[in-house]
Structures are given as C-alpha cells and as structure tokens.
Image (spheres, rainbow, N blue to C red):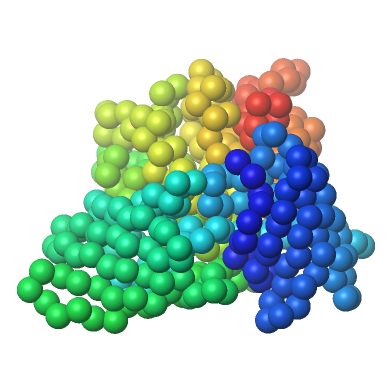
Length: 373
C-alpha cells in the first residue's frame, strides 16, 4: 500500500506523492496549503514534519488499510500528541439520511460497510470515478442507492430506491473527530451470581474517576451473552473520536466467559476491526493475554490484558493509573504501558517479597516489537 493520492483528513484535504520511501505533499482547509514531508516504511508508516504559518511539528501516520490511516502529531514545544486521521475516497464514517454508515473501501474500488441501527445489515458496493453504487439489506428493508462524492471529499449526494417506493434524495456528511475529545467505553459483565451477592461494578468507579476530565466521555454498558457484548463492541465503529475500550468480566485463555459460555477472542476482535478511532482494547479480566500473543499482535490496534488470574481490586488499582496516563496525562497506550510496570510494581511479573498481591502479569501488544510484560 502507498500513501500517494488524495485524502480527507482531520485537518483538511491532503494530497501526497510517494517516490520510493520519500513522501511529500500539502494539506489544509478552504484553499490553504501547508507542506508535509517525510519517509514511509514498507510496514505502512509515514514519519513526517509539517509546517504551518503559526505552528510546525512532527508526526506519524500508519496505514490501517487501503482507504484509511490513523496517526498523531506533536506541535513543537508541546508535550501532548494529538490524533490525526485520514480517509481515501468514500472510506470512513458518514452521517446520512439512512443513519450513520461506515464504508470500507478496498484498492480495486469494492466497498462494504456497516449500519449503526442494524448490526445484521449488509452493505456492498463499488466506487468508481467519484460515484458509489451500493445495496443495503437490513432486517426490515432492502434498497439500493448512489452517492456522488463531493470534490472536497467531505460530502455525499445521491438517491435511494426501495421496491415499490419512489426515489428519494440521499445525502451525507463525513463525520470528523471533535478536537481534544476521547471516549472511555466500559463494557462489563455482571459479577453477581446469587441474589445475596452485593452489587458492584468497575465501570461505576471509572465513570466517577474520569468525570472530572472535560475531554473524556465515559460510557458504561453491561453484557450478559455473546450477542450483547458484540453489540456494544460494534458501536465503536460509529464513534469518530479516539476511544479506549475496556472489556470487564471473567476471562479464559480463549476469550471471555459469561453464563458458562466462552465468547471467542476472534469474534471480539473482528467486531471492532474497522473501528478507526480505537486506540486501545483492554481486557480487564483474567488470563486473556496468556496464550493468545499471535492473535493479539495481529490486531490493527493495541491490546492489553493480564496473563494471570488477577485479583479484582489489584486490576482496578492498576487500571486507574493506566487509564489516567492515557486520558489525562496524554500518553499513548504504548508509553502508558511501558510506564505502568515500573510505577505499579505488582502489575508486572516481578515477585515482591511480603506483598499480599501476586504479580498480575500485565501485558501489552501493540506491534510485533511492542510487547510489554
């Protein structure tokens, strides 16, 4: 894959050319053109420097697929890196008359997608010469539509047809991340197994802890089976801003368990594979990181968890620090994970003499060379 081409990004349209590893181009909103240039790797990473009238800095983009890159930039003199995302052609998240739709575009122009209102909806189409032709099949209707992409890359116009109904106008706007906002989404199983068990939830504590941060949006939902867990995971596909997803519940080496049934790890990862804003998937559960290194490293986003049957309170204390470094201190998940095992000694694999806590076996998988444990 190459970075060459026209992109719609968080900071305006961007046009890049690539000669070998050298990448150059311009970006900007409403007629402005600021230079950006740097080097790309065969692994799909573009390290760059940008220059604007009042600001300059560095950054890095990573190709998640043909039609999408994610990344961040760091202004000179700043301590906090901020997100910068981009999409080619019709790829990305759109707010349309049919609700929020996420399109995924392949190199040959094939498009498939997802609808927020119906997890079972099937969207298939083809993008060619600025025009998307597609079909959408959902539980209560089937139709076909066309979208013409505005030259700016941020608007769609077209029409929608259903059997026996007159054609109606169809339009959409690209949904862009709101600056400085990050989501913390906690999806949790009920811990209580008997009527006389006390009620408690990790998500309640996280919501109270991070309510003080104006840039953090905390959402807490419960699951009771595979369908309900995957439903809430898929909702990440329709958030434009960066997000941290926390899955809290009983774990096994092959996935999460609820009501005596295992929810396979592969199903969980597939449900959020196209959530472009997902910065971290954290398993607040036992054992998930023990024997699944290959699957976790292969995911297009960082993943963390534990290799042991971790103590409930121990994991909570660990994660207060971990998420605070990401949400308030502005560290990347990889940097926070690296700091965590030195700041919170019982989080790692070190035996601490006299400690009432056994080593939690915290582990982080961000890339083949980014494991922390």
